[in-house]
Image 1: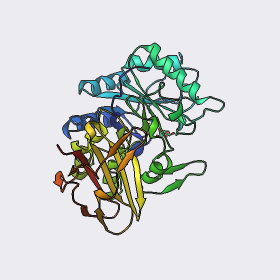
Image 2 (image 1 turned 180 degrees about the horizontal axis):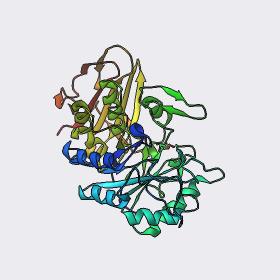
Image 3 (image 1 turned 30 degrees about the vertical axis):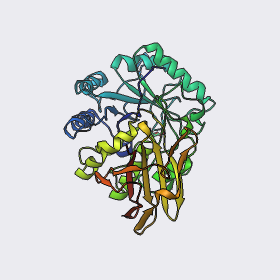
Image 4 (image 1 turned 60 degrees about the horizontal axis):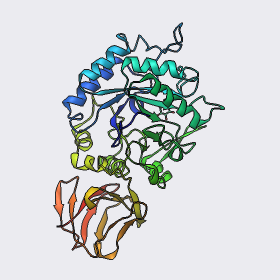
Length: 383
Ligand code: GAL
């Protein structure tokens, strides 16, 4: 596996959540331009990833995958060059099965050939799906593609997408830099949408489904909670909590909205550097839940220099009056052996969405949190 491609969780954009297979080169070029003009690149978003549907329904006479000439009249290499010309990176999608989930050619039996194609185009990121994989062993299939990418000798970040079915957090650390932990996300707070043979999941369904696998995350191997739904229709408060949680949980931050129509609130949220610094913290420790009592979820993430990020989320439909007593308990991370020793030490407290300092931990933390909103704070030891 290529080393050092994802020291912190990868950041970028993926076409699937908003566009499905309705993708084309203009969309990619516009998105690349917007990465620059909206300041997304400046804060670290750098991968632009085309999901399913970029290829023709059949391979060519030599068995090569071909970019659909109607969607990409100038071919894939020219598009990759355009994205690279903006100082950004480019990603593509394929599948471990013979066909992708949308019925296009997958890489089964063509792994080395496809890896060579992607490398020749300058592709920097491969998302590798799991449809049509009957009788395939997941670990083996992903190892095959990892080895094929290595053989092609062009550094490609490998994003595993087998929906958590085979528990990749137990085996994929040396295979890919990130692995999906669930079926597809959908833009709701806590719903399940049943599609018959599979379901898509709201933000809190995914968080709760996989709250016990933080041991597996770290630099160059991340639990991927799926492309984000920020800007796709949830309330402002829900978008804020969703984004806060993906940061607390050290998930890759892959945008899933249409940047051409995104409003200023959405862009301000996604480019909040105080929040993003939680996700980019060099320790790469995934956060965990401290409690969920009385409709309040409390989550923390240990950061370098003894600091912590802490999120208080109001799960109820009415305002929540927070009155948090720092003296009442010590928060301990038993896996990584750290604690917020607020009984014996004083910590400064900063609100990362309001961009302001709050009273320090010698006094109770009091504020109103609206329905489904979050108070996200940085907790630092006072010198
Ligand atoms: C799913 C995957 C989605 C998207 C889709 C494309 O399996 O989880 O993120 O890639 O396939 O068909």
